[in-house]
Length: 405
Image 1 (cartoon, rainbow, N blue to C red):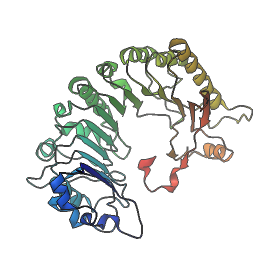
Image 2: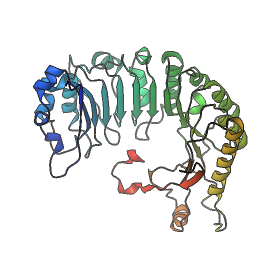
Image 3: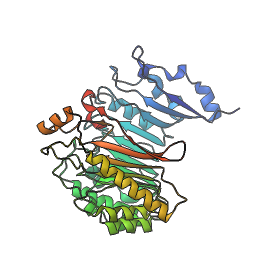
Image 4: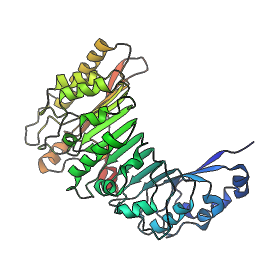
């Protein structure tokens, strides 16, 4: 029997340095060669005290079979490990998938003459400080086979300025979320470049997941992929973490245009600032998506820090219930055979791991159990009836890295 592929998943064990465990103690290199076995590595730890990878990871008898490498979240950051990791990557001629993760602003590879990464088809960069020039990218990166690209906490404009857009023509997944750790003065231009990439260069996206200046990203660029898109996550940098900010919101008629032009989208995520739209019309636009089953809607809290508490009312809960009722009613009217899988109303910038609002008035409200950040989810129970539950969050102050927040 031929072993076509094998997956090694590292499990954190504080009593042993997982990153120094010899690969040849687990895999038979001769069997890899004779059966041409593909190797996948998941959760590879690089955050220990050792500055280099174990020599067995750099053995050509192993690296020629490695097709997928996913790193674990490092502790501490990868500063001392990046060169060792790069030496591994340039040896992996068959590598197709790389999931790179660091902390904070991150660091980046420094290449020597003749070094080139393999032609990856699936690339995830989290907290990677992309500072490569166009000349460096041409010499040391091969993006021509890329089908899935995820950039989180990466300087997006630097990335877009250095690549050749036609190299990304075959992308089916594009996910871009820039972090505050990187300069924000180039975000408007980054949005324009993203818009151009999606509209002019990428042929058929299936997943579009971006945080950008939504007023600078053309609706027609999204509609360009109406025949292929299945998931759309389209959010603005402003968000809802500050009570005084207005979050740019799509016009209701543009939401309707998207619904009519994206017939296969089953998952949708949008911002809806009620100060900038008429919610019933906006929700009707959402209901126009013929195959939509999963919705995530971000809204601002109706509470204000300086307002007197009203113990008799829960305004954010009441508002969420009104939206749930409206969306369920619209669906039953337009397409009763297609039930909602889930509707999420995210209030005030809620996250599963987060720091709550820090002003003195909000701290006093929080101490009384009144929060601006809430999350309500409507799903069907085992009896087929819709139920609403409020999600719990975790205190982000106990985590070292703010990239989780």
